[in-house]
Image (cartoon, rainbow, N blue to C red; front, side, top):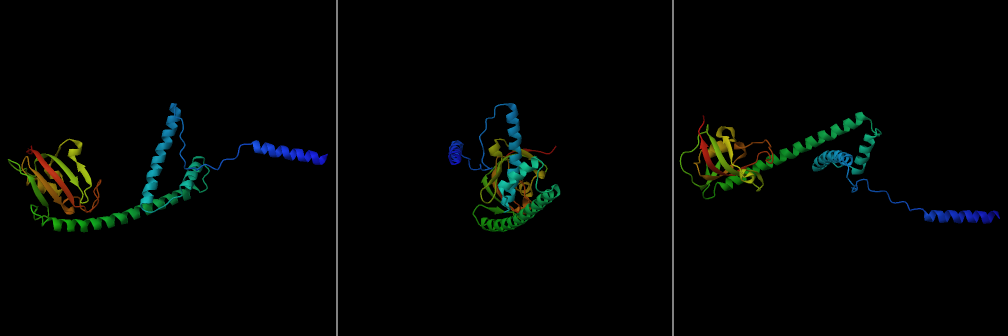
Length: 248
């Protein structure tokens, strides 16, 4: 009798176990789930999370660019633990570790920029030396080189004048870093408030002229990086002089 009851209980347990849903493998914590976002509350909540995600992604990419790797699963776990006040690391250590990583990123970026700046200087000198031998290229005493693509008429601007121009600027590798053509709007500026290569070069032009300038780094931005222009870059500009406005 006892054996029969035990057998029935065992069989019942097996049947019930078979009827239970099977446990799913743990979901990848980095897997993005598509959620219904209908109410303002849902959208606001999601937007805040997305904005924080963009900030973290930017930080991760900056670290990855200088070969500092992170464990993304632990990053997510640390984020959740931090939100719940359950971080396994004390706040002082968290702050210290993040400051250390930021310092490493700065130092590595500094080394990368220094190397790139030196390479840009060498490449610029080699380019200008070869370019000076091309037919139609004129070099001034300062080292500025230019080609006359189209002559203009009238007078040339003075350093104190304001000029209206259309222009396009590129790096030696062809990367375009600025263009009034792309904006579909000419630029106007006092000639004494631009880089030395422009101040000197545009004074060689007359209204209606179009020149191509090859500007050594020392007549442009020097070793300083600005926008899309790395330090010590030799710059190439196509410039059309549209109008001259005398000072005053």
